[in-house]
Image (cartoon, rainbow, N blue to C red; front, side):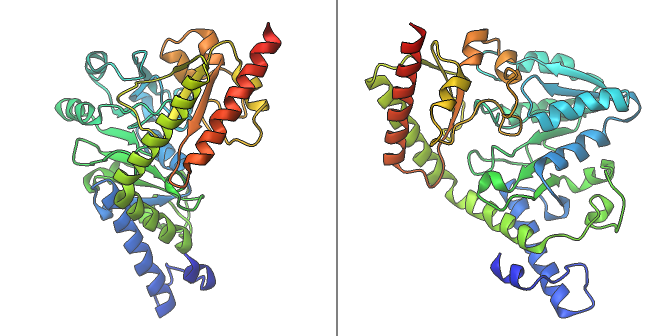
Length: 356
């Protein structure tokens, strides 16, 4: 990114060499983003975030009372946008149930899919890490002739994403894969782009779907992050699995009582959602200021309301209130995990002692 931060050329000023070079760099980044989902570079539209990208897709299919089908555990960028579309555009939003592991019920989904204008199911849940059967969902959508949108922000670099598996639109986030914040993308099947409508009007950039001068440094950084995520995916997954096992082993050794939320098998190892028996999550995090843990979605974790994801999974209220998200990243080290497990153990012990 550094050369483009030092030379802020406008990629849309193609009359001179500086603009042409910036435009070429962006097209290379567009190719890297497409390759991360086995998509077509002609279908990549850069946005300011995955949230904006999801808004463009959802709102494009929500006009005039159209019918949208989403899962009960979608990210707020889909769930809240769909709710707004019910009020603003008279859209009909139908919610597909999930089981206690957070996996969409395919039989229920198939029955609900009839006469839908768009289906939106995320590939990997951001709170519990559950992996959805996107290939099966894509096949159902193809058989019903319904376009499928999938939020892959938590999937890139963790599971293989393939646009050819019945996916019409995928929305991505840069900062979720160690890229710069402030940029995301839609990756669409080229033949589906005509269905998308802009949220704003202006200079006509990105095929008229997202007006505004593209930030060359962010596009370049996003593209490289996608390339690295694909290259390092298997190693990252093994690394995260070892760290997650280490964390849980040390909780077990210390006799900490906990329950893992979400599927134990069909989940990404980078995301661990744990409920600590008899300990409120907010109280626990207050005891752990040196650890970067969270409750609920990171986009709405400032709220003290209960997790809609865990509630939709049918978990008991006390388990929902005690749930904490623990993340294991590419640069997380084993000694950091050991320290974290020790800190969590001590905090849980203190809080339980106060409750006696």
